[in-house]
Image 1 (cartoon, helix red, strand yellow):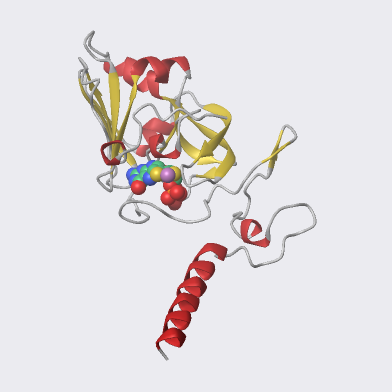
Image 2: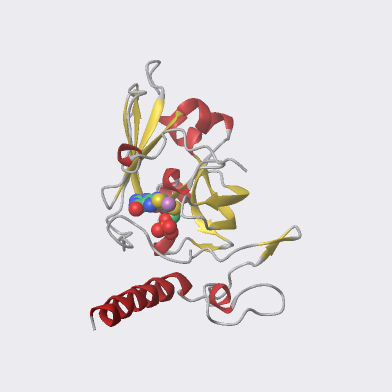
Length: 226
Ligand SMILES: Nc1nc2c(c(=O)[nH]1)N[C@H]1C(S)=C(S)[C@@H](COP(=O)(O)O)O[C@H]1N2
Ligand SMILES: [Mo]
């Protein structure tokens, strides 16, 4: 009797684990290698190929955000440039979109094992910071987000990679789940550096600063090892 109970318990645990792992993957794959689950994530009008490279859907396989997907009201939204700058600035959404735009084909790698190659469009972070006139002591940028999430990167790296904050993915407006209105396109850095729903870029000299996941055991450098 007791043995049966143990076997039953183990079986039910196995079942729960198995169903959690399979997720949407039990839908059969299409012949071109795109699973039906992936197929379902493409939005209408989303570009699916760029210079011969197949683009992944801009909406990821699942949401792991610390407080769920944020719905930002664009009429009250502001992007603030703060901290060690001589000219702190506040931009409305449209004011950011008016700036010189750039396109990048860049892959996001999440520590959870999935990746997404997406065509991003946005403005250079350094352009925004240059306008705010960064003080000499400023060495890092801390990205603050609507959901309370933060992460940081050295200004040197942002400049070297010419990083963008993007407002468009695969030719369509960035979806809420991807950070509308803005996501940091942190090329060659792990997913947790890709701050979404960014509403403040703070210039700081605190090179020891650690953001949300960085204070919970994830490396501050977050370099993608390919
Ligand atoms: N504001 C905010 N940005 C965020 C996060 C978050 O929780 N809040 N999560 C980060 C992580 S860990 C990853 S992998 C990417 C993509 O998140 P997703 O896996 O939930 O799609 O967004 C990053 N940016
Ligand atoms: Mo992540």
